[in-house]
Image (tube, rainbow, N blue to C red; front, side, top):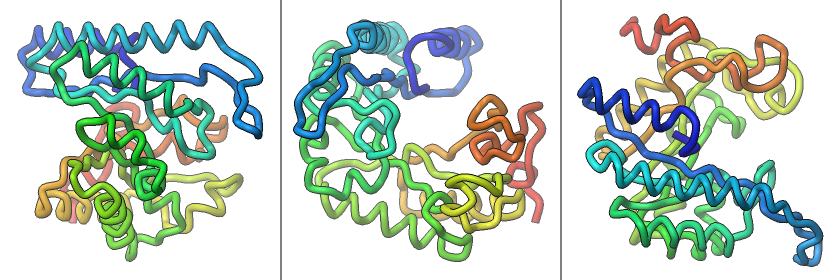
Length: 257
């Protein structure tokens, strides 16, 4: 769950009440608290975001302590240090929130970033603060066709470990979309075919590799999300699910050959 407020507590309560064999990593969504100029100086502050961030952190702490048998970890912040992020967060700010969560819970704490960040020297400042590392690796978004997607993913995963050899790495997001638009960045950055057949093959290969290598992972994602991305029905952000929005399974989940 990417945020601690809203539906997250409902999900945890349902898992508890129904006795479901499910575990949850609770996220604290951290937004931009200040605008930073080219020289690194703060040019504008957003006090309402500060309040929201603190509420996210406090709720994540409360839920982890209230559901110790279900909440297995907390991620503080999601993709806050990549160049294209719409919710960039300064490292000292994020570190303070991570320390607050670690001080008040007993579960492992991390933050989620894309693979390219974890291979850079500056990532040490965050790596030193977390109990494990969550990395997002999308071969499809990085101009990889299906036949090289897994090998490319393996290389990016290895580069992160090379930079931080003492950390446990978890693949927090990896997947293959079943549809895409022919306009915008997705038209140029995604060259792999988007279909149920290619998703089925990527899913099979990815699960095979991570299972054999004993790599903890989350496959992105369970269900299509029609509300995401632009208005066009082929917008790629709507089509990452292993199941359709009506909960019918796509080929990867139907066991078809």
